Image (cartoon, rainbow, N blue to C red):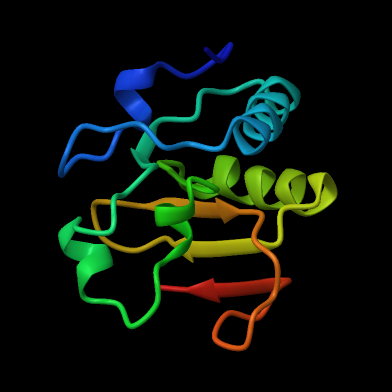
Length: 122
């Protein structure tokens, strides 16, 4: 599998199926190695029937298996964003308020409905 992530962490929480892209996860594993701190997974793969995905007009990054939400905050979030930019991740979403703080990472290509590279906040 992967050096720093288990299958259980990466499955869809709606259907329990796996769907993560191996090349993407190797990139995340490499970033985790470089950062030197743990990457708690808030969300990874989501099937098209996952309640969050089902509401969307177009499948989201998580449905492609090329997105992950890492539960970090403060200095670790700052370092993760720096590392992700250096590593070439094309989508970075930041949620740093409330009890569930995370940084979203993906490496999707630009499309009409989804510009890349792109940074956003939740």
